[in-house]
Structures are given as structure tokens and as C-alpha cells.
Image (tube, rainbow, N blue to C red; front, side):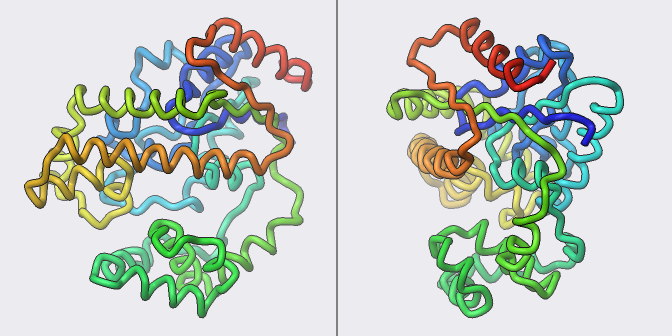
Length: 315
């Protein structure tokens, strides 16, 4: 192992980007994004992708690396992000993995790959088309229950993204995703990691921040961003358009719905997503949680995070 990864994770709208930049400046670091939607080009507003100004000159990797017409996969992320991490280590700098997609973070740290996974096989498009038909998602969940009852038991029948992923892995590799998990669970991780997780002490403060963020996205032109993607031929059923914020606005635009009401739905689904993120990241007993107050002192947060990392032997 070349060195330890720093992982900065937590639910959406907790200030991970800003803290990641500050830590990179202190620790001779570069940021590797772990966000399953910030990988797509032309989707800056709705994914809260950091601007050049917000990056403050710190190199960021794994942002805007895929066309939104593509169905980006965790296997591809592991391959490309690992190359970034290895290059950062090779240049004597510190990789800092920043993001809220727990599956991507875990897969990168563990070095988990689907060796036979073929992201361009057409399985995803076929499954998405089936899911879009009336009763289609329920039928796919039943199919997963027959193929991989272990995965089906873990997933809500409406969790379209994960149901499709599990079936896609099965059709493209001949193995269930549960079997892949078992085969890799006991292997030593590719990287040692020190993890800092951010959230607000009061859940209502987190939800207020999420609502404010969505309002800001709407004000900055999220509707126009969605319209531009549709005009460019990005399929409504593609992975990119399933992102929270895009899916709801596409539906409103297609049906002549109230955009303000659609924005409220984006807030609701973002809050639900934050709860799922918290559940995921709390599974890691080694994560150091930094609990934020409504009006927290950012300099103190940076100092506390830096002190913790240095206690763990990082530069």
C-alpha cells in the first residue's frame, strides 16, 4: 500500500466539498470525488458539482468524466478512481476521497471489481425500459427475489436504482451481487483509510440546509439545465436522468406540472436520500463523526479534522 486514504463522507449538504478543499490545502492533498452523479458532464447545478472558485486551486478528480447519455457504473468508477489515487500517491501527494456515494467509497477502498461486468452490454437499458412500464419495477423486484433472495430482502421494492444494478450484475456476470459481496468481503482492502464523516447534530438543521440548497439550485437555473440535457438527446430513462432533481423536473416538464411543486418533491426526496446516506455511513465503526451545529465555526472544524488526521499518522 502506498499510503492511507483520507475519506470525507456524510449526507448531502453538509459542507464536505469545502472541508475537503481546506484539508487538501493543509495536507498537500488532491481531491478524488466519490459522487455517482458528479461524474456526468453538463449536470453541474443539480449535482452541486464544485465550481472552479469553490475548488480554490486544489486539483479535483472524477468530476465531469462521463457523457450523461452513458450509464456509468461502480466498476468503471473503481477502475478510473483507483488510477487517480495511484497517480496522486506516486507524485508524493495525499489523496482525499470526498463524497456521499457510499457504494463508490467502499468499492474504491476495498478494491472491489466486477471482473466480468460489461457496462455496455445493453442489460441496463433493457431493464430500465421494463421498469418504466406499469408494474414493471414490481415485476423486476420479484425477479430479483427469485434470483437473489438475499439482495431482494435488503432492498425496498421501490428502490429502482439498486434493483436494476443487482439484476444487471446477474445478467452480465452470471453471479448474484450477493455472491460478489461474499467473495470480496473477507479480502484485505486495497487501501487503508482514515474516515471523517460530517452531519448536523440536529437532523432538522440538516433538512433545512437541504431545502436551502434546492432553492439555490432552482435559482441558479436547474430547470434550464434539465431542458438543455433533454434537448441534447439525453434519454429520460438513462442513469443520469434518474438523479434526484432531474427526474422530478423532467416529469414536471413532460406533464406540464407545477415546477414549484416539483422543487418541493426534490427537497422531500433529498431528505430521504440523506437518511439513507446516514444509515450507510454509520455502519463504519471506525468513522470519526464531526457533528455540526446550525451555526458552526468552520475554522474550528478544519482544525479538529486536521488534528484527528495527524493523530492517525497522516501528514
